[in-house]
Length: 400
Image 1: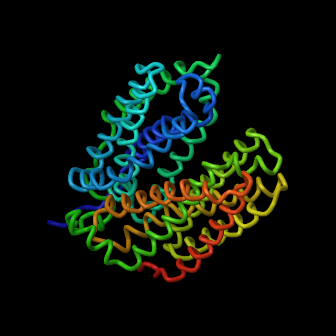
Image 2: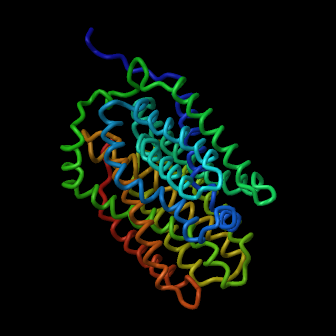
């Protein structure tokens, strides 16, 4: 009589959709200055490096906030944790418009939005664990991650349309209103968890975050996963950041760089869907992680040495597929191997290490360019991926 009933609710898809909308607008807020960089330089009257800082600030802020957000999500639940991120994004997203042409205020408000990001991204596996059964968990995580790429793609596409006559205010107002509306909808309609759990695993007792962090760093499999996320996400962030500098020496204009970047994101979206479904269907993580890394490694080596348009587009797509499709599988693998550590703790650590990798690679590889060509940096990163492939073979498959 005391046994808790296991049941799956259709409302789980509503919760996932609301999360996706919040994550999409968050990514649009993050990337909003990148496609109109030259316009922003003129509008704010600052150096281009300071415009780049508006996007870089998200990665920098993520590091110290990751622990706080993971603790709040673990202690107070998915809705409160992700809700904090939604409220922060909504308020500061609108305040960017109020700042008008004051760069200092815009940077402060952009940092404010960045503070909200870890509360959203670190809640992904918590959402999946609270609402989805085991055979849908990786798929739910994959869909949640896909919303991140959709947001980036929409931001890159829509932002130039919303900046007529080199005026940023229409874009800032549109994104600000959208972020506030979506945040309110999220807070009102999202639920923390269903009345009854979707799986027996959710009933397992969790450890405190302080104890959980100790367990994470004593777990050899998780340490391997940390290295893989550091290299994989770090390399993806670096390639996308320098994508114009990668193709320009090969005779291509910024428009081609935009197409290549979009193809990488499309590859990531497709890869997340396919790998997540395969992971849930066959209950395997290790072979999918290894396959993704091998695809990414081969693709980056070819991109490093080719100037052919078709080859760049094809293997740019495959690079995105390889690097990004490993994300949902890796996050759910981390949940499996670190129980009873709360989901947000392992999720947060992996996301944070990926941000650290991006910052370090972006700053470091600026100094290894050759006559403005980024191929030496690409070659080094391709070698790093070879190391990642080798390391991934030391992972142990989880028992289901």
